[in-house]
Length: 182
Image 1 (tube, rainbow, N blue to C red):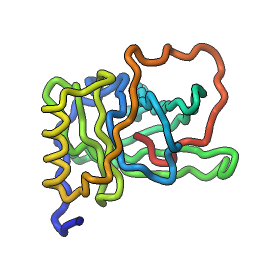
Image 2 (tube, rainbow, N blue to C red):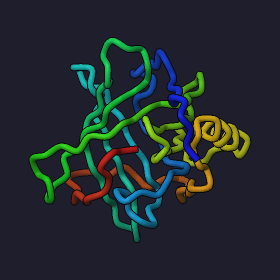
Image 3 (spheres, rainbow, N blue to C red):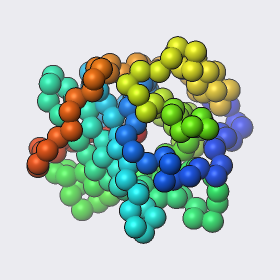
């Protein structure tokens, strides 16, 4: 269902405002995310060098899986919200980083919800600062995704509990979860 026009991204994102916790409201299923994941969330922290520390977490059968990585602007001289996300994926590829695209296709002015994709229509995420998103806003994001050529019938809503799982203290087992991030 894709088209030939270039996917539009947000310009002039304030990365500091974008930092913090985001909950996955819906996404396209993909080979690098666990099946039946719940309470999936991402936490972004700005590093002193301008890169972003990424912590992705999901729960499956009550067990937490996580992966950490870093994100950086694809073109430092551009004001477009096109980021690259890099994860190291032990134990299979302990040395080789896996890099993916993280394009902010839509972001509300209060930085409360976002539509994330990439240069192709293969991956799509709807993120929110809260564990649930109003239907009206969700439907607006669906329409935006359609305008960009996404087949929104592939979107799967991610179950989120309210309140979300508590913060994890101390070292946690690392699970193989995501190659490209959310």
